[in-house]
Image 1 (spheres, rainbow, N blue to C red):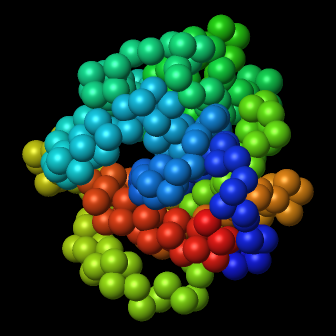
Image 2 (image 1 turned 135 degrees about the vertical axis):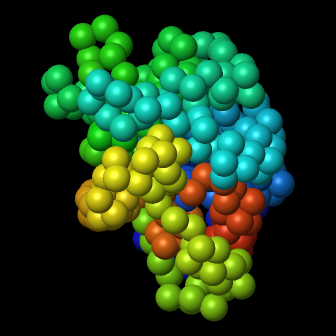
Length: 304
């Protein structure tokens, strides 16, 4: 269902909603802008289900710390972001994610999920049992860390007998998980869309221009860790993460399309999949602005 296809909604209705926040790497930061617009329009968020970056944004929102996360994202430089990626030497992934999570704990705090003021579900995938897992209790950051553990990039999160990785493998748009919150209207954010009418968007053009100057993150990591040119891996290895990103995007886009067909939300807000590369978290301000614009368009079309 496109935003323009959504039925007009009576402003006199209850303004309670639940959010399904999708996976998509750094593009998921656009969901901060979406939430800002929803709150400005008087929407009352009763519950959030998030996958991957959607779990990061959703968890911060559920904890009442979204402004703090947004400020940190907007004021942290590319170099500072890269320094948070600790190499996973001897581990089954390029990075452990431990330094990143320690930093985010300082920014957002360390609440338990069951104590959050807004009902929250982080969606991950258990590789041991090959199933989708909804994390609704325990340490918030353990759940978020599990939800964004992209295989090969971040090491899996082990909780009990489960080996948890990125929820986007099976549920890139966690609409089903929102049903636990009861019969509220569901607003979902799809991170894998590219509406044709956005081609001339000035914010998107700025993002595209900046992207031309942004080398791959793996290349930067290699430059920091190999001082001897002869010891560096071949140049084609620098594009490993970009290839993994495209493969994951392809899979998530197809699964997300099926999820939307089976369980259409009351309103769908679409974020273009080419807004940035999945690892460009230092471009938060641009992405948040895109999220705001897309939310405004969708809500206006739906009669909010």
